[in-house]
Structure formats: C-alpha cells, structure tokens
Length: 115
Length: 129
Image (cartoon, rainbow over all chains, first blue to last red; front, top):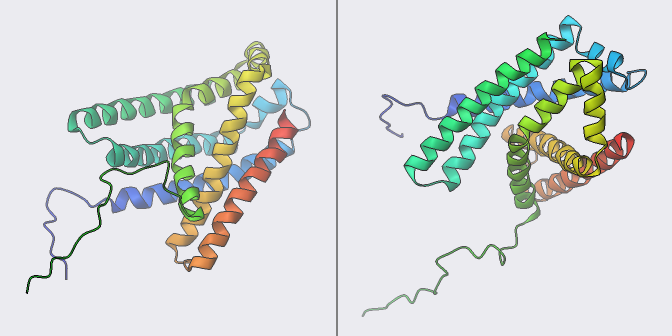
C-alpha cells in the first residue's frame, strides 16, 4: 500500500493518457489523409485545397492540429523535465512552449477557415 | 572482522560516446529526437501548409519553396521523423498494452520500426521528390 498525499497535484496520469489518445487520433487521421491524398487526381491548387474545404476534412484536420499541439506539449514538457534542471529556465521554457502552441492553434484555425 | 567492500570506481558522468544502446533503446531515443525535431519545425510546416491552401498565388510560392533542394532535404528529414515517430509510437502503444514485452519480441519490433519507417520514407519521399 502506497500512501500518498494527494492534495494539490495530479500524478501525470491525465497527461499520460491524453498523449496516447491524441496519438491514436493522429494515427487514424494520418491514414485518412494518406488515402485522400492518394485519390487526388492531380497536385493542383484546386484539388489540394479542395481536399480540406469539405466540412469533414476541415474539422478532422483542425482536430488533428489540436491533438498535435496537446501531444507536443506533453512530449516537450517531458524533455524539459528530463534535461533542464534549473527551475527558472525550465519555467521560462514551459511558458514559451505553451504560448507558441496556443499561437499555432490560432494559426491553424485561420489557415483552415480561410479556405 | 571488517570486510570492506571495495567498490569499483565508476565514472561520474555518462560517456555518451561509449554507451552502446540496445536496439529498443535506439528506437526510443530516436522517438524523442524525431518528436523534438518535428516540434521545432512546426512554424515551417504551418507556413508551408498555409501557403499551399491559401490561394493560387500562394500555392505557386509554396511550389517554389519546396522546389528548393535545401528545403526538400529538410522536408525529407521531417518526413522520416514523422514516419519514425508514427511507427515507434504504435510500438509503444502496443507495449503499453503489454504486447510484445519479452526481449526477443521487443528487439524484433524495434527492428521492424526502423526498417518500415525508413522504407516508407524512401517510397513516399521518392514519389514526392
């Protein structure tokens, strides 16, 4: 029996699970994307951008980006926790990474809804 | 009696150039490196994607950018990084589910990950080049 003080922190299970759920979604999306790309008649602007213009693909692609950014947050944070020991630098890197990823999510939304 | 255990002198640092990783360890560190590389190149990839679907003019600009041999080389590396991360990730998911945990199976699957990701990179890369 392990006794833990469970107040005020979670033990990373949520992130561990989230990383895996997003991984499965991205793997499925990768297959869907691959099939769609293979079925393109030609690599023209119309065909390529048309692939993302449909409601289903646009939505799935946006979900893919969100999954990617959350997945990257957990993974990159793991790297910082393993290699970056000074607390100040680690905190700064966490904040920069978080802001970058949130910014990327906005960027991805703008790309997809301007189509 | 005082039998002093003489401890072997151990190096206090990790001599990274002397450590030989077993194959599963190699796949694991490549998973991390490929993930970090993909993360660092996200702005490049988002910019390229944005251009490719933005307008006919930006699509032409996108075509010109990816036509550059240097950019092609980077994208080829990123393609490998994605495919390795993909294949190794599936292997890790299976390990999480306690599939293929014994030594022989783990070695075998790491070999498969390396070979399949490189083969897919070559096939897709050559097709896109």
